[in-house]
Length: 419
Image (tube, rainbow, N blue to C red; front, side, top):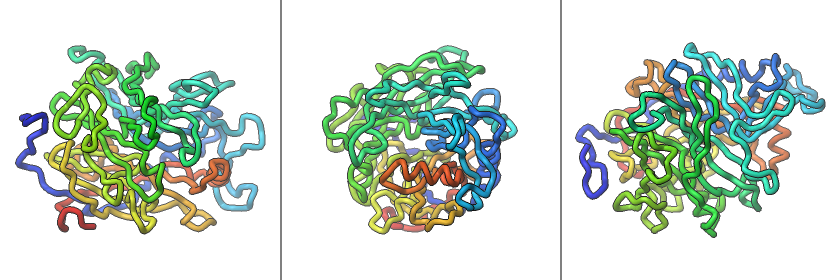
């Protein structure tokens, strides 16, 4: 692939793509429900969000979760008389909550064990909190398997981490503070190190702080890492902006190797200029707080919730953009589909869908994107009070577990910018 003023030259095979068809993937959704409902262990995952995945060299898949619950799930009916499995929080050890964990899936697709820190008697995050006072934690996002160094045959898992700290409204789920990369050994998945990549503490406007790692795509010896700001959190109804960095394979943990797109070229410092983002206008065009990118043949496709929508579909509708290079220009948004939500006794307006994530390693035909693409999304109880949301997701565990769809991408049939 050639370079022109730092921009990737579009390949001739690039064409506009959008969601052509989709269907709920009950097999994968049910597998997470089976594993989460298993009451045999106190340190097993019972729910969480984030839902990033990476396939390991031996065929296993590592799933990464933010804010997971661990512990016991009891069968319905729950104490409120409703027909949902529920977490028992009334007894010591009945349910635990940590800032992050991972779940290992076998090559056959069966979830087998949960990875955390601490001990069985005192569970802790897999990636330790930065501080307890004030609360300052790590959320795992995208991960890749790469050589320990560019020329090494030994492989490791590199996991991008978002740093967040407790903050005021509207940042009730944390103020962004920086991006790190964790290294896990293979095949034993032991945490070896955590390296700082980007520090956002000096950016006064909290909505303009950028965290990297919502998606990562390999291309011609580079890992392209997408990130976003927190504009959609700071102002409901506004979309966030997407940003782009790239790193030579084998150096994801090396901050000096990162290069950031500034709108014209790649530079060693994180961009701050008005044209540094690759997608987003602060209104309808843009991304949600998390999004995902895949490459099919020569076309790059981005999935996000319908950020900035004036019709409330930002919590129910997945939209797409496409481009011929990761820097864009990105065309869209194009309407994708309305996600299925779990059944509950409360109106669906109280249930939010968010964070679509692609899992190309788990496509139906063994990882090739010309088959059906597996896409997850998270669900949660919509409330301005975290304690209210927690009470409801404990009452019905299906409200805080990933759900999955399989979809096919086909030619775009409407002009760029049209839904």
